[in-house]
Length: 182
Image 1 (cartoon, rainbow, N blue to C red):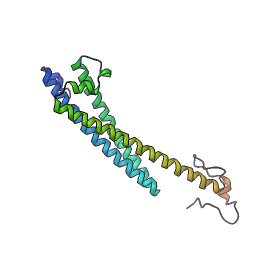
Image 2: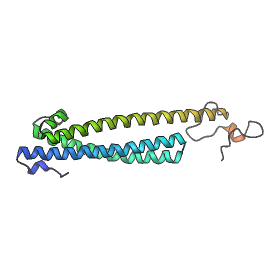
Image 3: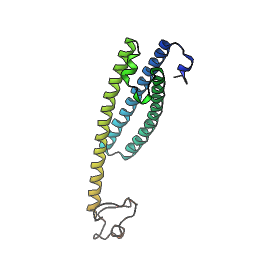
Image 4: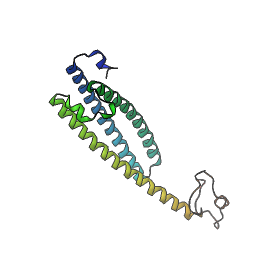
């Protein structure tokens, strides 16, 4: 996308065509980003189910990279809205997809609606998968807390990394219930 294509376009129909083209490209980039993010979230969900801690952490890093990419897409979206607002003589906060579609040719308008629908469906699926992963992580942490409480930790673990003195002394008979040194 050019820095400011409308700055050099004086013909309103050409400005609308340029905006439509940029919007369609932007929606396609949004879809690709959403698909990459969904793949990461699904891979991370599989790692959670396998209890593969390294893969879960790696997935969190990959997810952060994609979130950063999406921030760039959001900046791009804001620039498109600002250009549309100028062209439509309205505040950028008031510009809707319907406003944008109204100035597009019919073929571009259909494609924009299709991509908008695909993106909405994809983001809905992504939210659902992410919620599932969060619930799985919550269950795993609850189970870990339960296991640690069985070791005599009195209800859990210390987030500060300190180990209770009873476990350090191995004060549960001949051996510790949990071998925390391993």
